Image (cartoon, rainbow, N blue to C red):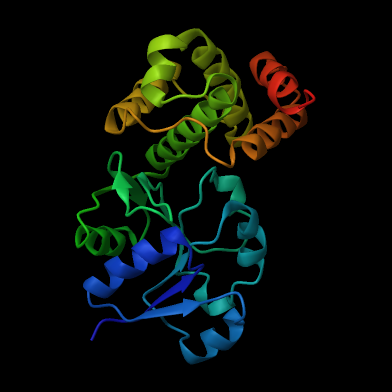
Length: 259
């Protein structure tokens, strides 16, 4: 019998992964908000992996409270994820997946492009999601996985922030508002480079983002989290001492303006 999978966070993403693990014959042990992870860890000290499927804002506290016996089994999937989010959390070689399928309450999951994954549990993730016809690409190096994380961040932040200004779909954004998109893209890239301490090839990143556009051309730019993402990006830019004029202009026009 296969070892159990612990899932912390039972939202939209957690539900999809749960289905995949169950179809792959793994027992799934959920940890909800009312439960103590430590008490669950006493009963299941050596699971196959611990999928942390909480939202971005809950990740730091969740990692702080993760039982020690689980710290070598963590799998992270959050948006806007970067190494800085886990490197000081005493995790041992976490598995990272950059999720490129969408799941909303009113719809089943929709795949844009294959989801890259890196780490010791990547193949288990790949096998589980394959039962749902969700493709996962195994990434061999930390450097290549970092590129994939930045790619996803560039996609989310650029489209969400541009959506506050122009609305519409990702196809319309590139076809009709390329100037705005490139300005926002450059500001977001400067932030990502500051937060990672790395320099990324702009043209390669842009091509990778546009490939994701092609995966779902009618994807709406602006999700409900867009204002918070813009605010967070502006704060990060300030911490990095970056000008980010495009972000400032959109914030001034769309967030700070009176209704």
